[in-house]
Length: 549
Image 1 (cartoon, rainbow, N blue to C red):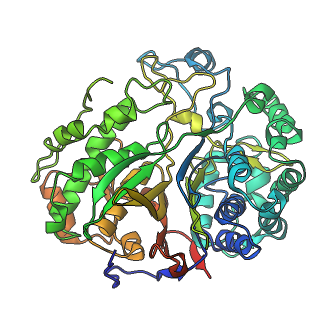
Image 2 (cartoon, rainbow, N blue to C red; image 1 turned 45 degrees about the vertical axis):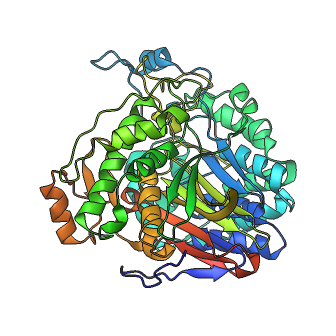
Image 3 (cartoon, helix red, strand yellow; image 1 turned 90 degrees about the vertical axis):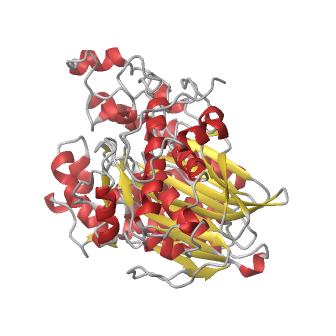
């Protein structure tokens, strides 16, 4: 790809190039991964080390009780891992109705935070699966950088400090939260040192005894004892029986401006990556390249394609064992062509779901000199997740259970052992050259429902308009909300914003760019010759870093 190397957007970042690369949302985590590469580890080892460090330096977004997903290019082929957790066996609509009552529509009520939003944490089991299959260094070596950071502490960065303080009013009363995350009775200030010795204790035990100690050993027993003492439903059986799944990827092809054929890969449901594939498939029916990159028409078409995708995602997506449609049906070329015809190029439309024919988060990416590349994401969902933290062990638990529906007719209805609708999605781009597949880019854009939208917008900028990854990352973004209203970043061209409003798009005021417009990390392979290395970009919306040598 012959990128346009100039960057037309305000930025503090430059693209980074090297043969070994780590890009994350915090410099310490990027350096942790790079340290492992220096020690002879591979890209998978580096990803685990960076992921562990991120749990310490960005606890707002992830922790030891998170979930994760990964796409790995092992040098020959792609592998997809789903390490999202499942509901405790005690959960069902009746459980919530008995505990919290019912809504006017008859559905059970449920909380947004606390124990009754905590599904079995999958992230650490995901690390174990990655390490067992692809790792080269001992697990203890990979966890050592995170242990050192947790014990010695680090100066609080600006973006994390802002989100930390914002979470305090909602979470300070949750079990274990204040003891873990309110030193001095408040959130840490910018530049103030924060250490996390309880998490270091957990990581040391995992380094010594292995990951299963979290699911069957001393840590598991502490989690369950704390649940029993504070009205949670998690059991030892829930933890000990959990396993992540190798699920492969689903994909959508696209023709790029350089005339080459590429494929965007996502993890299949229960994650929402299929939304990016649907929108991309719809956009193949329009000549975006003929329209100005930041102009009204191009942005309008992308927004409408995303709205069409979300209409289907919100209707059908669930644990794949419960879905009434398959990903193949939702990605059928004839179906996407029919959906594309619903777009009015001059007017915003509120779309309903179609009927195909029968049949808070951290992202990181790594690459090594042998050609292995990892696209990895882990999350506790909303800021600090459930707010529940297991004392003395620093296990901060996600609130992914809030992603379930309480509608008994929904494919996504809550049930024991079931995975909820998930927002976090890693992505990977391959190039198809005369039937031979080449790895091209490992990337992701974190931030709730922004993720498939960020995948779409950054990929269109790179593939259709040949913007280099850092420019595509820095460009202003829009976001389609659940009610199909639109958010736009403050630095978007005012004429484009006015044009979108004139087309009928309803805009909302934005106060929180941290979550609303996401944050991306990108590693692009410069050529098929490994000696040429990679190009990396890190989003300026976070405290991150792309590090290479």
